Length: 329
Picture (spheres, rainbow, N blue to C red):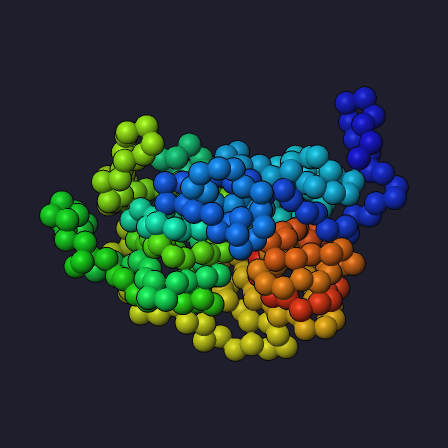
């Protein structure tokens, strides 16, 4: 970009279809580890780092563009001032947030609200629909997805009595599994698991139980039982597996399609042109290396494909997770 005294114009040597690479933001968590450094080569801060916000325009972690004509600007700035990059995507904020979570320990037992509850009770926030692609799971690892109480009263009683073995739906987890976590689903990633998370751009989490853990300052993290009782979906049927059963067609597996996002796993062996006829797409390289539109990428690279690019040329040996929002209408 060129500063023209309070405004910006586009540098003519760049194009509207250039990929938008983002600088990850790292968050320390009581349950975090060091796998983001050892497995992905990120330069992370000291301490237990649990989350890499890889593509985000959320106020709690607004990613900076690392190259091209928008170098140094934030993703939220582009959404507001260069919305042509995102086609006709609606809303007052960039709608998705792409994370990598490294769970060395267990995450809290938690649940997220839907859009309407979050709008009313969380100062206009989006709700939090999310999904997990499991990048790594230690042998014997388990995960919590769902619960067994039939109504609010039974749920509250089981929490009060600490009947976690009866309440929680605990299932095995394996590398390559996938889980869709709708609002109202009780859940917890457990130790020994690393996931790529695609979610709505929201940071609202209601904790039901945190194992009575004490933080570095000697305090316990806040619990949110009242809100959790409000939003848990008591009618949802618990899952028994996260195994991906969707077919792979020409290297592409449709992992999820819901009103908030569409998520595909894409395998690249050699060269291919990936159709991207979306308002925009978020891309994460989860294995291997190669090039995207001629730009070198490797495991841990993340970028946004702008609206002007309808095809993404790919070369190399790598696996990607590609997410976009469904077009309205």
